[in-house]
Image (tube, rainbow, N blue to C red; front, side, top):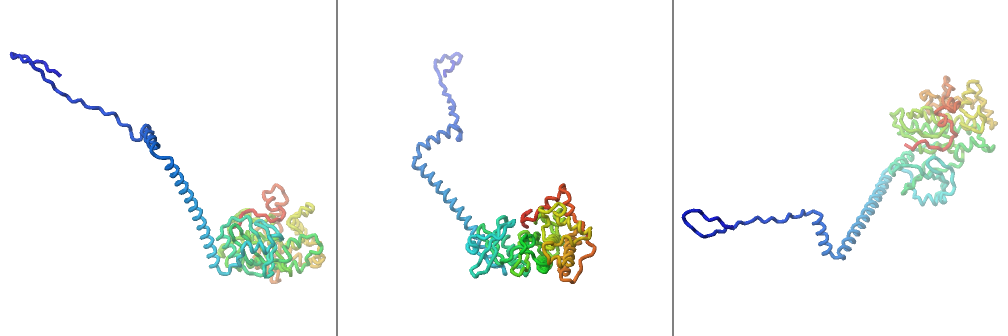
Amino acid sequence: MRANPIPGPYNYNSSAFIKIQRHYLAPTPQPVNSPVTEISLIVKSRSKVPLAAIISGSVALLVVFILSAICIVISRKKKKKKEREDDEEYFKQVLGMPRKFSYEDLRIATDDFRVKLGEGGFGSVFKGILEDDTKIAVKQLEKIGQGMKEFLAEVETIGNIHHFNLVQLIGFCAERSHRLLVYEYMSNGSLDHWIFSENKNQVLNWQTRKKIILDIAKGLAYLHEECRQRIVHLDIKPQNILLDDSFSAKVSDFGLSKLMDRDQSQVQTTMRGTPGYLAPEWRQLRITLKVDIYSFGIVVLEIVCGRKNLDRSRSEPSKHLLRLLQEKAEENRLIDIIDVSSADMQLHREEAMKMIKLAAWCLQDDHTRRPLMSMVMKVLEGAMEVEPEISYRFSNAMAHNSTTSADFHILSDPPQASVLSAPR
């Protein structure tokens, strides 16, 4: 840059130059994570990483994945094994537990479950023979939602019940998904085959029927009043009363039973049992021991009358046994409903009518007016009389009078091995 000459008397002819430094503007750097930079790095990276290295990395990841999966499987197997060992340890620690069978043992004993004795709500029952020639009845449970410990706890409870009038639990099987119960074999089968049979050779005489009723009462009295924890059976019916070779009766099938502490007067539970044997209080789902008393009353009626509580093969007036009982009581003609197929029953009509009155006492709508089973036993043994002021007006009989009743389908269906809810 040239400067202008300085004015004045002196005349100089010279020039000066001044150097000024200019600022250099560098290009703006791209952000490290900008798309351009990333693409550039990827391109450079791919250009430098060989194909073999990429394959090696993929294989390594696959190996890690497989090893992780194997570790998970092994861990789960160890956990299941430990649970089985814990269950075995629990089983060993409980005194008085029934015998434990393997599934293979019971498959062989039943000849691959060949002879079916019956079928219920939770499975089928098969005849079997053990190596020592002991005859058994094997119940194969199918519709249960219990875990191993819950199942073993139930087995422990049933296994510790010992009474002549309760079917004995010999053993059980709890192997993988298999749950089986092994009971003593009862040669004469269930009571329903005898009291509902049309075979003239299977008609029971009065003394046998009276003994069966007393046996049932003894078994229920033990469950209700003598066990450490009281047990409500909840499914008393002829199909669950088994007979041995001398026609001694034993209560069986505790699949629906409910435990009650001795200080409990009632318990809340979901509806369970068999239609035709359900007490009226089931509508409120709060029950007492007296629901078994009610079912017992129905069974006594069926034994004395030789017919089902609901028999659709009969004419409308006599189709429902409870309604017939109500009508005959009003007419003072209880004698009319005694089993007419047995001449021996007709010879003991007076005793049979007393038994019908006992049944009616057990069927009172107000459960507080029903007797305890120990009182029933006293009546049966002649040490006590039936309560004289009993009502023959039964709400369940009234339900049969109208198909519009909300309870009709629950209370009047034919007796069958049905389950209205899950156990316990």
